[in-house]
Image 1 (tube, helix red, strand yellow):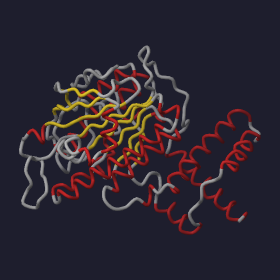
Image 2 (tube, helix red, strand yellow; image 1 turned 60 degrees about the vertical axis):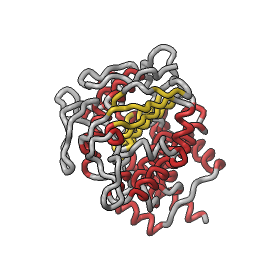
Image 3 (cartoon, one colour; image 1 turned 30 degrees about the vertical axis):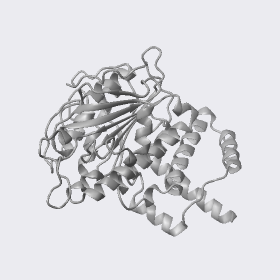
Image 4 (cartoon, helix red, strand yellow; image 1 turned 120 degrees about the vertical axis):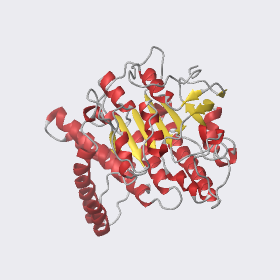
Length: 382
């Protein structure tokens, strides 16, 4: 037993040293935002419910989305959000840039329009460790983290993780050799914390030890709570949401963007698409439960769920749903906003746009998005 404990700690510590670089220096920073006077919100989780999701299968069928329905009852529901069928890549990108621009289905290039993450980092001098994007994976999705704009670009970009987190093939081979680690008990955690504080090297060494301890805890949470083992319907989306939950719980970044995509199975199967909606709602429920159960997060975190666009009105020949008929089912979606500064139990029918999210989040944090073409979600604040 003692030998296993040593090996486990060595494995996780070694992985933490390697992961620390991937997770960027200075995690869980004490960076303070110049929030608007009287605002409580310090963190935002922005879920781009991409892949094409109609209101009919979300808020039009409450049994599919009990968790989001509860959030709507406690927040603001925008029932008339205009969007454009720009292709999945273009439509999702517009949520993060505030600029509607069509992109090809196989296009894989960063745009010239700065992203929300760049506006926040440049406008507020926000460190990189406070901005994250988790995705379902795929070559296109890395392009959401920053633009090619000469005044913004990679130095103001977000950290990005796909559904596999930081775990590569070599690390998984180590797990096959050493076995799956177990979570430490509270007593063992407290003892290790005291030992870290007792090491030499002064305050800088203690801070570095604490930083590595957070990375160790992140790795353990990823492994013991099953992110890398999630399979089946909407697995990619559920992994992205689980990563967001664990990042938020451990590192407390200021902004986490989450990009979903698995709803695009709708082309071939309406039933599979509906199940993706249900599974994603359950994963969003897990994320919000983690927020509610953490006193600090509960008092300071907002969640916005914005679809990229909807789907056709009628089933196709495969008994699925495409996205190309120009119907209101395609062009109008429903957005959810929940947080400590937002109104509660309000439905707003006036027209909004998917491109309004960037300006809304920037305004919430006390900065602007000068090149975005959207506005701000109206009637949001209590």
